Length: 244
Image (cartoon, rainbow, N blue to C red; front, side, top):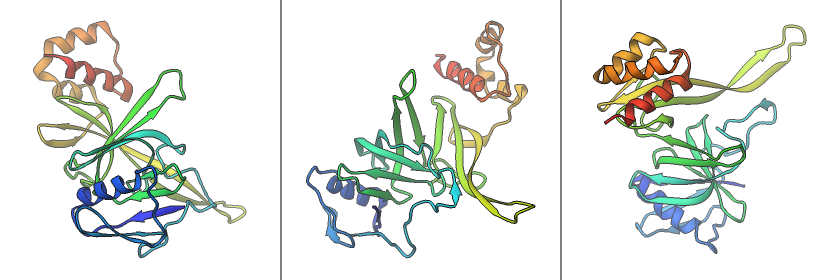
């Protein structure tokens, strides 16, 4: 069951109160219940908030989530309060976060409350932690509530914007319409308080790192870098950020 959190005051403050309530071991939230939190604001928990909150339609292939499986992780709100060891999913279609309680009830936190999400994945050969952040300056079609996957952090933060939407395609013979979730992504640098879409181009990348020209030159002499490869750019930015 998915429940929806609504609030009329500061999103981070209200979300903190709701999470504290919901994550208590014996906390229970009845459908359509109205509760009072520490901030003296009423919070309605709805299955419907003006529109139905429903699972992905069965006729759409794929998933709106970054990972379909629940992953243990943590949430940091905009007031820097952290909630850890929670099963989480990141919805890339609606740019929202889902979490699950031990009773298997699923809750949706509305956009504007969560600042950072950490997803820990230990299913592969090595443990991986994926970090999503929002609150960056608006650019292109993204606003401050859009999540970005952090590929490298430091003096230059290397970000991947990931969005999913439903793509429809009609079969030319049968006329059947097939629907599937498709991922669209773009890459950005955040530096000196500004966002800029990157170009996978040697001259552009090296110009961004020109204050460490000699060190970057030495690095490139030792390692062959493809400036068309996001992973190679990530490693180069990671090296640059580690320089004194």
